[in-house]
Image (cartoon, rainbow, N blue to C red; front, side, top):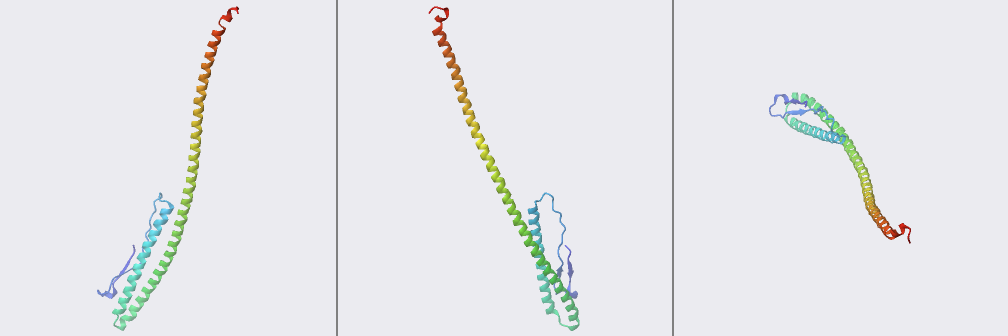
Length: 183
């Protein structure tokens, strides 16, 4: 953070002034989602806004204290010039604050839109998952039905084979004396 510190004309009774804004270059890791990056940016903007508000408040306090300390006309013109510069800095800080508030609003809107899109995607995915689950359950039911039919068919086949065997044995017993040509 770049900061300018001043002491009012060597007077140890006057407070120190810190002005300037923090403009940290940060690299966002590539694995953060866009929404996380936007939320991080919102937090940074809030912090910068708070810092500028604190700077403005310090400057306003300094100006008030500065005005109370001016007793002599030779210092007055010099102090007036510095006061004008400080007022200009306050004006710039207020403009920066206004811009940051606008950016914050845009970021919040972007976050809300991203959240809405995520909810829509979740809903679509959930609907697809539900349909797939229903299809899976239907196929599972069909499989169970087919397995039951297979078991019934196997039983019927086995029963038919047994009946055929019994029929053949019965016929052989019944027709056994008929085979030798004597009726």
